[in-house]
Image (cartoon, rainbow, N blue to C red; front, side, top):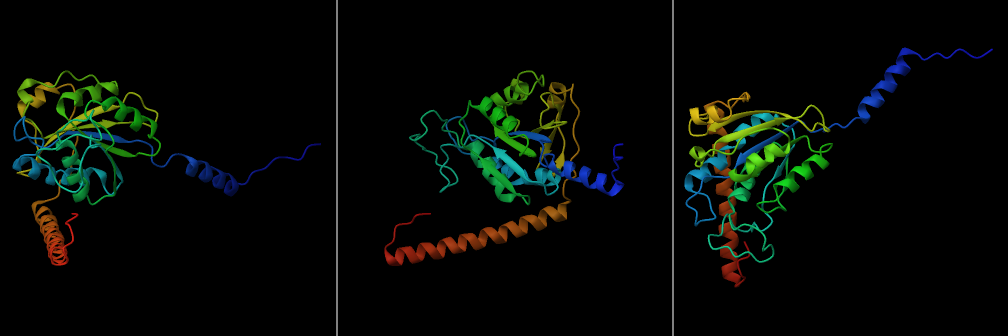
Length: 268
């Protein structure tokens, strides 16, 4: 006669907890896509003054939607020189296939700098390599919980389409729109058909609001909610950043004076 098999509730619960903990903790949830900073003109690879201001404000949106979760940022920055914000007369040497525009990398770097959440930067791409970005995020879906792609507008629609979300060509009437943020929502890390929502960030008034042309273009998709920080919190964050910037600039000046006194080349 066989021995009856009996499993206590506590044992069964312990087994379930073990199995649950073995599941991927960071399965892909969202991919956000934005355009780079505003341009000066087609001849400049840098941001306009308005573009730098916008890039410095995007973190308000992503700090709100991330709620402390880690972000992985993807952008074409293989040729980006991190020793300076932007080189107007950049010469492409190591990555001859890359674009001269540094706007995407600048925008991504400023977002990363201002974020309260932890972020990883993935910059070893060139403009035109959006398919590789989609492949990399898909391959890393079990490890990347939330991703941000900073790209140029002529390929953003291609990125969205690559995830089987049908969006028509970026309208010519929106050539100078830099405030749209797309949100792809994944049911699991193996989801090949995410849903999409969108919104627009008016950083000057610190509000989410899209104009009629954007609404008409993306009328088949809903907007997603963003609980933006109130004005007082924005001012507080700005004040803290200004204090940090002033300290860093002071440290750089002191280092420069020391280097000048010692005859050491400036390696900033």
